[in-house]
Image (cartoon, rainbow, N blue to C red; front, side, top):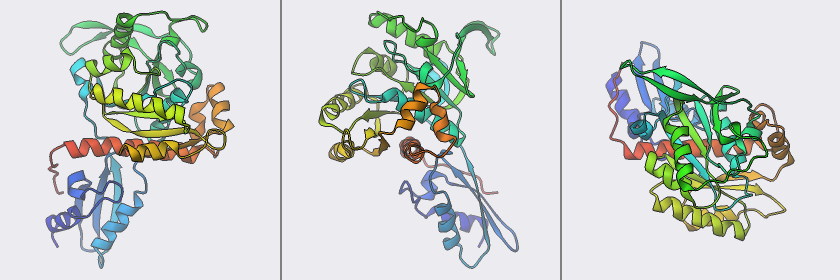
Length: 349
């Protein structure tokens, strides 16, 4: 078979994770045939793609009788809708909840570190102005500085520089106020701060920007929907009914402001609060269930110590759950981008 024939044959295969054809996904980046081997390069839509070896197995089966070498690369797909306010970010993802106390901030920080663990370029924005938790959870310290940036046109502008947390850009009002200082602001001041944190901040080029929203259904989500398009929102809740009632309100809010809901995460899953409530509600609402995070002391201890990122550095009971949720969210983002995009046209080498 020629390279074109091989490409055509592989393009008809179905991705085992997303149920979409290889052609639609643009998975096959290149095909090179020599006298003794067929080399296939697969380009994944996210570094957090789970079980990539299954793609290799499918390719090997489709080309049985020939020696096949499959290599993998990745390029994060994104809507890049932040471009209208000058952002170079492929995917902006909001993490919200209908009420406080469900571990939304811990989940947001864990997701950011999870994506970084897989190799993506990630930023973390704390939009919970009244109760900023990200500085504590990440252990990041310092005061963001304003520096002068020169544009390609020669124009010089002022840009806020995020704090570095283990190689990840982080920004929060918690870096700008005293630890015990209360923020007493009305909606217009919130809008102004969020605009500065997004439009007037040097985030650089990112694959993902995770935004930790305040609890409830207030001004922040509306401001975000007006400023830029989001790749989607993740809703965090605990298993019990009282939390699920408020999670439904958060989902309704995201629907009203045209932010797609990527799915639901069940946090603090276990004996105290029960298990499975969020999964059942996701099925009822026809939304993806993104996974559960067990109620485990390790997460609380690492968060209190400013070491959420260390949950991915060693073996602990929470690690496989967090990795699974990170992968599920990354795949939901990729799926939405792919289904909304035209068929790719890739060169055969």
